[in-house]
Amino acid sequence: MLKVTPILCRPREMDNYAYLLTDEKENVSAVLDASEALPVIAECEKQNINPKFLLVTHHHFDHVEGNILLKQKYGAEIVGAKADENRIEGLDIGLEDGDSFFVGSAMAKIIAADGHTLGHILWYFPEEKMLFTGDTLFNLCIGGLFEGTQEQMWQTLQKIKQLPDDVLFYPGHEYTVYGLRNLQGEAGEKYKEKAIARLQQGRPVAPMTLGEEKQCNHYLKADTFDEFLRLF
Ligand code: ZN
Ligand code: FE
Image (cartoon, rainbow, N blue to C red; front, side, top):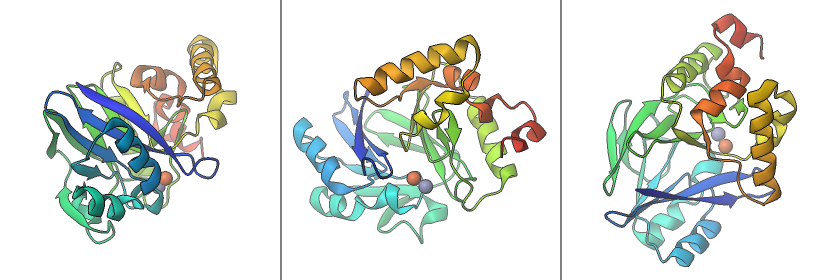
């Protein structure tokens, strides 16, 4: 069982989420996308945890800036895409598409996800039914194309669409509010209700299931590349 604690970083500025992951079976923890160190340290102290790994989805500063301090403090290893080895500071372990990586007994499968950047990866835990999407997929939206092409982002989204509907997904930012007005139909109403209730409680909207997202996120709903292109 992987316990997930979202940690809001850079609030009211970029609203990043770092995620503290703990494999409760072997009591091994990791931080995914340590956007900044201090809120992560606060949560680790609260839970009395020394993270062993610092997992990274992509090289952007708002996903890695806490890494070096956390590495020094906890002796944790930084794990990210091999493709990003020259731009993720302090990278210890480089992974490629299809590689497995274990946080204790919890196995992650690495899915290459070019689009937002080249070298962006998704962290997929098939047994735990969890997907960490970084800046590739947000609630009701997708990440901007900083390095990749529309074609590459489309291919990446097709990989996400093939994953099971009951997978919970955890994005890199809280951007849900921007997509709420574009929701349609019965599935859209349900999504909106759930999202607003969580936001009003001061909680992240995540996790939604991929099934909910496939029904409501226009970028996933697009059935053809042409349809997808019309969303830009
Ligand atoms: Zn980014
Ligand atoms: Fe970001």
